[in-house]
Length: 450
Image (cartoon, rainbow, N blue to C red; front, top):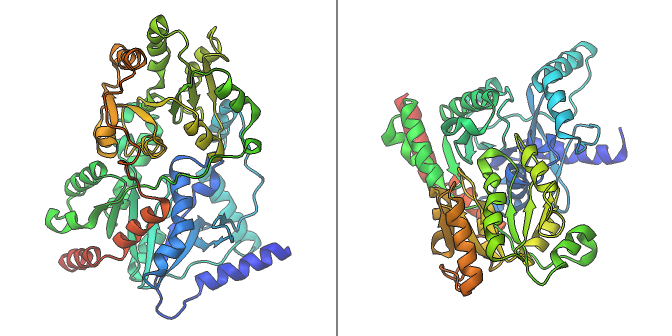
């Protein structure tokens, strides 16, 4: 064992060992540690772990990030910078070609790999790579990750039997309510996860009130008493820290060159390239815009996801690509902040969202926003956005052309009037949900009734 791993094991052991009756918040990070992406849910999980240290201390509690491995939740550690430190030595995850990633998933399913690894460890009697969590009555197991295919329910039940509370961070119900936007396999996997979490949850922390309403409805459909189950659902807002402008050396030259290539700032769209995000309407929108505003530009920022490659091929084969169109699939947080600071406006055309973090981040930077007219966007964007029907190419292009022509944006200016929580404040809201007496009372009442 290396010196670094020896030190980390000591830290992990101290986190896993009982410290009197001090409560612990055990944050599932299983899927976050298995992905190269720092956007979306992994970004939220990492920020909850990082900022949860101070937020939980107000309740005399400690944060313990955990991952599920070999039939146990293993305690992880946090670096001095607040980053999650894994206990499992793995080859570095590379941003391989999407086709190769897909083939690997088909030929080497993760559940089979995990089963083989577990059985092999038992055969050769190898020790666990980290310290297993021993659940206690004052613990809270927070299912904050997208570990939808992870089969840990027997361990979750063991935790509940020990008196540990189980909570879930509910991001959305899109694979259930909009299965057309995901694969059939993911929709089925997600529905199983949703049933397993909502039938066990002692509280649900939804990232918007729109998602909270859906959670209450789903709990009722699953047979949980609505009078007792409704108080278990709360909502909190995700953070959107506005950091200082990035240094030139931290932003790749290609991005800086595109942003600075013209005095006309580009429009920006942010999000995984996939059907749900609806970026496929943007080429048609800008074809209409260019008829009257030929200098308009567009920057597409987003990892290429399911069914996203055709759009990227269309963009890259367009005669305006490189001058009026550009795609970056792997912007760092620093580069994304730089793009926010040099874009004319955000266009966020999603057909379904649980929140819409790019809207909040853009408004926090004082940017103008064109957003699709869906409940979550109305909730987070309020009067500061111009809304359009998700499939309305003509309507969106008309909004853009009118603004370019008249110079009057038909929505309130976000600067000075828009306030979004920082990640510290967002995590404090989440900890308040975790330690609220309402959740505990409702939980005890429901369990007593059962």
